[in-house]
Image 1 (cartoon, chains in turn blue, brown):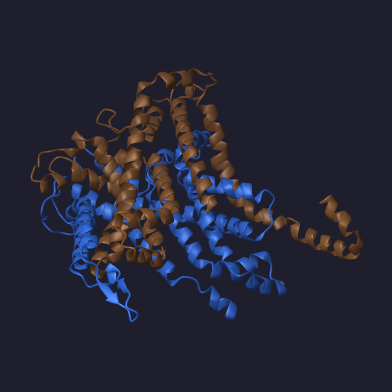
Image 2 (tube, helix red, strand yellow):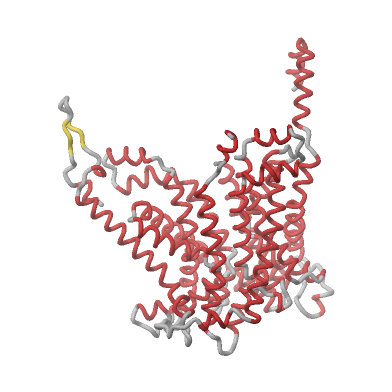
Length: 298
Length: 307
């Protein structure tokens, strides 16, 4: 990069005789091409480094006699067939229930709170918002020991109370995200609905939720991914083995005397799929952006 | 307030009207509180109450099993004295510090380098490399731990690729490897945030610096860095908070071992509470983590509310 500055700069003589140096970027010099190639090479190298840890997962999942070692696979899809049956499938279903319930609770409670924070006068609003921002910063999974003691005392060590606790771990961030999106919905639209005697719930359902949908969806996806991947919370808070979600089933695999490595890898990949699909969906949501401008004009 | 009221007496009816409309606006509707109730109720019941309970639990003799799991009580400063003399706790604190510090340096550096290289990269390379890094970020911690274990153990991917199949990196440098795994799993987030911040830097600023023949380093230090300060601080704090709470990745890879080499605070707290039976002492270690997170959290709130 240094050579760029040392090389004789490209110049241009203006009509009044002054000589101006051209910015290096505009000059089709060799160093620019070199720079681009260097940048691309470093990027490709970093990409490869990030790819290496994933190789085992991919190769072992399609290998019938996989081990911890990296090997060229004896290709078959038997591992995937093996993990999509019986108790393993049931654990995936438990993950769906756990993630879906906690997303539902956090999103419904979150959208009401976000609307109230965004549009209403509330006593101590600043302090409350600060409290919510703070709880979104402190990872609530740290609270798992006192919550365990409370749940154990009331006999709640099962999947439903755990879903409620997981919803609380993503709730503060969801409220913040949704509040920002509701702030962007023009108040004119809401006032128009009020003129026609719409109730608060109707305004929420007909005006706010449709228009803030990208934000609400993004918040819900955040909540779902958070609950889907959680390991320590169900590990401690669910005492019934048949209610354990997929991450715990995956961990149990490892504690077996003769682990089936191919199955572990295949199950891990299956477990990732919903997360990747939701990420792809959410990034498209954001790219489509808002349609609020059109809403006002129409 | 008083003085304005006195001055405005001449326009009495107008003031009364204004005052009335202001009262209208300032009134808190019951429905506003009702809408807040579910969210605040959940946070009070499952965050504030457990937090208060944990402070008390930390000063008791509660155990997971045995007589003191039912008949437990306040023991005063006993646990705190124990904590002060617990060398394993202090070494766990250092391990946590290394884990968080290393993660911050790695995540911010790699996140920035990737974000800035991606901006100028060829399209297909941008899609492929960006995709790989995002996938490594989205991968659930359990899966990431599993594949990192396989990659760094004896005969693993890294050992094989480096031509020394028998070397077991995870056994030789456990703390470094789990830190690298954490960096790997968090860089994607940093890359996306930094990428968005870089796109917001006005290109005129960079072009002006180019006309002035500023070097790459000067452009970075004088233009990019000041404009991205807020973003960098937010990423640093988020990385710190998420690393502090990281349990799953290390638990899958090493369970805190070999010995206590990777026993960061969340694992030590879990170990004391659920393996060594000392729920109260585990809760106390949890309180230390909440305290650390609070320091980070307060910094985060101060910076987030400034912008």
